[in-house]
Length: 242
Picture 1 (spheres, rainbow, N blue to C red):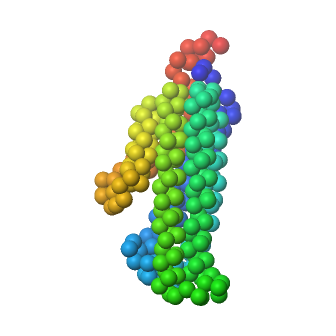
Picture 2: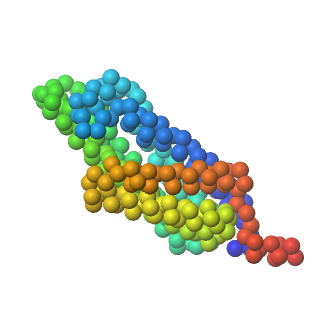
Picture 3: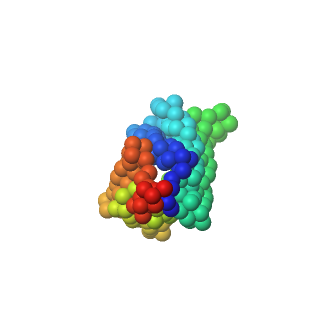
């Protein structure tokens, strides 16, 4: 690559902004709200919390839907930025990230089902309170499982995007290499959680899944938004003579 087009520069700024937006929004809907409402291993307490904060629970669901819509915007922006570097890999990464967004947005149906069971119409009154709570808890558990599946596709797609960024020299190599590492760790540990239930309760696994990716996405978002992309060093002599 010897030049960077205006569409690539715009795509880089869009990607940087969306990276930061998603991190902030995801903290609300995927960390703050669940930590307030969902009590692991206690279906009754979880049900009481959701019923007492029904509006907050639905706002978090709506926020997730918008987040996953923005995920596709991010995937397209990164594809536009990187397709000239490696069209095949950029397309693969975009498709994996699009698959992740599709899985995640469909997975919100599980939270909507739990909300409907606990706050829904009268035909659910045929079930006892314990049955309602157990059924809602089952849908919440299914949401966790679906979220993990989406995370695997997120990790794979972002790892490939990071590898193409590494090849492009558009951002510091250390940052792109960290992105490859962090996202492969995310995908690998999430797959391990699916194979070995309970592994998510191990501190190293819990932190290892999210902390490396958090730093990569925040730093990359800031870099792309503020500094944009740089012309590869190999292109500078050619540009100087041009």
